[in-house]
Image (cartoon, rainbow, N blue to C red):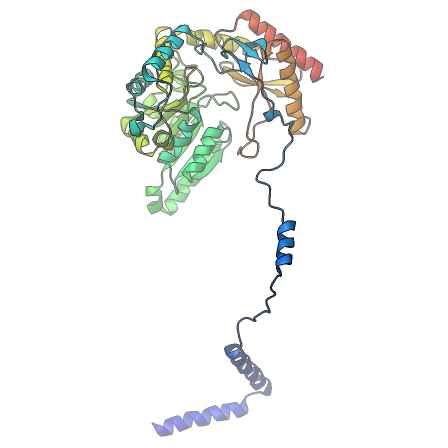
Length: 472
């Protein structure tokens, strides 16, 4: 054993002598570098300098904090309010001037309806003004349960749930079901309430081009390929399609029958936001499902606010019982907000009574929408956006000035011109820095059943005259 070790040592010495000189030099340098790294410090202590009290005070005096909010002009149009006195019904008083209302979403004219007001007044005397508590904490009144039952019956679904704030309805419903890791396919024209719901869900969002079913199917096919690569993950990933019935930003309708086909083909769920179509479309005002004669059970969740056709406040979701009951534990707007004031719930119930008793009002509204749509076509300098049966149309500039601010100012001048002549219109407003896909500036023209032929002719003439004067 000892002789073997001696032989190895002799071989090492012999190899050392036979090695090239450059090889020995390189190895020597490496050995020295390793020794240096082992014994050197990894950092150097720098000499600290202590500030005097005067220097500290000078630095504090010079420091300027970042502004809490960005600077803005006091002339910003959002800070200029048109003040309304009295009910915003067919005739509205703005800045002391009586005008014909083409701005408020009072589609069925129920806002100033005597029956609705009397029911709200009776409820006010019985229950008081508000509730001062969420639904789970002594905020559930019998009138809330009655309204939920009536909405479910009206929509022909198993159950309904009401929220005290329309915006919070869909914004709470989406994150109640879709969580981190889930996938949502959503139309690019989706309203801001949907966008906030998507943000709160923390899900993976895939936008498809507005009403483009080919683009949506392309995304669904891509996801199908991804699911095949990781079937274990695909089994626990929920997939949703979120659309609006009538889009508030574009005034056009979603292709619901095609969406239902894609739903079953690719095994996804559909959430349908119907704030602009509830109480408007369909023979009985049930919305897009009735308009297209689609089985309402094919839609996983329907939501709508009660602030348009119903002329109240709040919103509701409806669908199967097990779907709706989940929101009573997970819908943030339902669990943490004070419940809907009973007088507004009573007003909504009476509005439903009127809608059920007189379904002809939906035919009247549809005919008026078509009449206004036809009359507004060909307005010089303005492009009409929307479908003929939409109750809230958009007028956009045919040719943009290249500046959004300039475009807004031109459209504002048209609105002001009409307001001076007793026709109330409004600009479509957006949070420009937060919108995912910012819509083009537009004037919104709202149709209601209370508007007469004379009102429509006056409004159309006024708009055309303003466009000829300002835009030419």
